[in-house]
Image 1 (cartoon, helix red, strand yellow):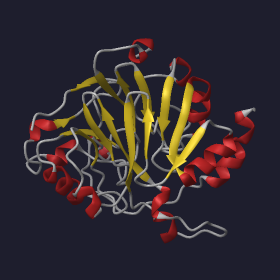
Image 2 (cartoon, one colour):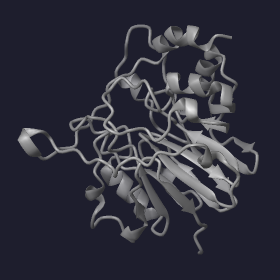
Image 3 (tube, one colour):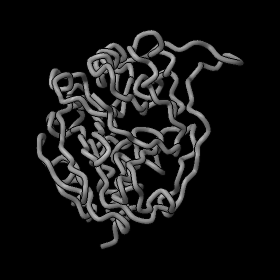
Image 4 (cartoon, one colour):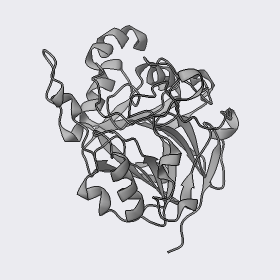
Length: 298
C-alpha cells in the first residue's frame, strides 16, 4: 500500500484544536519573550539501536522518547518532521536513519504526539504500532501495522511489558467543530513500561487524575510540567512529583516549539526550583542525550 496517498485523508481527521492556558513569560533581549530551551542536541545513529546490557532512554524533543532495553527498541510519540508550528531544536535523528524499532507507542491523536509524516516514514522499520482503540482506527486508515488497546490492557514487546494508564485529555469537546466526533477519555492514554532495569511511566497529555496518584511507584516518570489546564498544570505536576518523592523526573514537552505564550509548549525547568522535593532527581536532557536507567532501591 502507498502510505503517503492516505495522508490527506488522515489530515482531515487530525484537526488540531486550541488548548487554553497561558503561562506568563518575562521579556528577553530586544523585547522578545523569554522561552526556556534545552542544551544543544546530541545526534545519534545506528549505535542507539544495537544490542545492549542496559536500558537507555533518549529524549527526541517534544514528547518523544527512544528506549533501548537490552536490544528491544521502541519509540513513544516520535515527532521527527513535519510539525505545523516552528521548531526551535534540531531533532537528534532523521526518520531515514532509524534502523529498526520493535514498537512505536502513541499516546493520543494530537499531531505533536501522533505525527503522521513521522509514523509513515517509520512504517517499514517498525514491527508494530500500538495505541488506543481510536488512534488505532486512524493508523489502520494509513495502512500501518497497528494494534488498539483499552485502558488497563497489557501487551508484550519482546522483554518489555507495556500497560495503558488512564488519561483525561478530551479537550476537543470544549471546542466543538461542525461534524466533529465526540471524544472519549479512553481515546488518550499513558504507557507504563516494565523493563529489566526498572519501570518507566509516560503519562501522555492529561489533566491530573486520582488514578495518577495511586499507582505503584515507577522508577522514572517522563515528566510533563506544562502549565496548561488540559495537562497536569504546573501545580498538578508538582503534586504528582512530590507524590512519588524519590522517583526520577525526566523532563519533556518543553523547549521544542517557538511558542512563548502557549502553555503546553513553554514550560521552564526553573519553575520547579524550590518546589519539588529531592530536586536532584530532576533530569534535564539535551535532545538525543543518552540516559541509563537504574532501578531505584526502596
